[in-house]
Structures are given as structure tokens and as C-alpha cells.
Image (cartoon, rainbow, N blue to C red):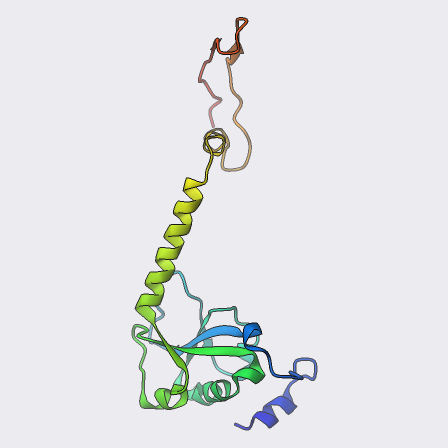
Length: 178
């Protein structure tokens, strides 16, 4: 494919005027299309058929290419600056056929291993959950106990403050039933 013909066919509003700086490019993974997508729940997998499929992909998505679309992959790999992407070959994707043709198109891309990547993402997500749980105050925990899932607040029944001291009170822990 000739990059000039593709750029000429693009809508002028979408045509890049200058190369995109590396910091502004989308970080994307590429891999051969597997027979069945992994169910990791962490990465977004998008099968690419034509060059226009790349336009609206989210950051850090995995672009999957069948043998028929290796020409599109070659075009992207050779013109990353023009398309505003930074491609990395995702190796070790389960059930993907890393053929010689795929390797010839992606030989110059930095390689990232699938299993360690998924493991690091999983560990980071777990660490984030632990940080969030540790940062909860007693007030937050108590609020969760008396707030329903729909956001309404349970009404406390039989809550009475008696005596001259604020420490002396009797509580009834009855709440209205959900």
C-alpha cells in the first residue's frame, strides 16, 4: 500500500498536517487474530480489517490482524508517526498463530509478553483495591452500613439521647427493613 494514496483518500479534516509527537501517540498492541479471544477481562481486543478501523480504538487496545489484513498492519507499522500510534507486538497471546508472515511485518516493533502483562495489570488492580480499602475512614464504613444500594438511607428507629452527658444514651439498633 502506498501511504500517499491512503492519505489522499482520507477526509482532509482527518489528514495529519505534521507528524504526531511520540508523547501524543496512542500506545497499542498488535497480535495475530486468535481462534478464540482470551477472557482476561483486562485488555480490549479489536479485530482490524481496514485502516479506518484504527481511527477510534482506545488507548492500550490489542489490535488483532488476520492474514488478509497483514497489509494494513504493515502500513501502520511503517507509518506509526503519520497515524499517531505507537505499536508494540504482543507475543504469547493464547491460540494466536505467530506465522513467518506476521513476524516479517512486525520485526521492528518492540515486543511485550502477554502473560507477564496480564499478571502486572492484575497485581496493579489488586493493589489499587487494597489502597482504596485502607483509605476508607470509619465514617465511610458506617455510611456503607446504613446506605442502601439505590442510595437511599435507612431510617433509625428508637434512637434516643437521654441524660445530661452526651456519653449517656440508649440506642436501639433497629432499622427499617429493606
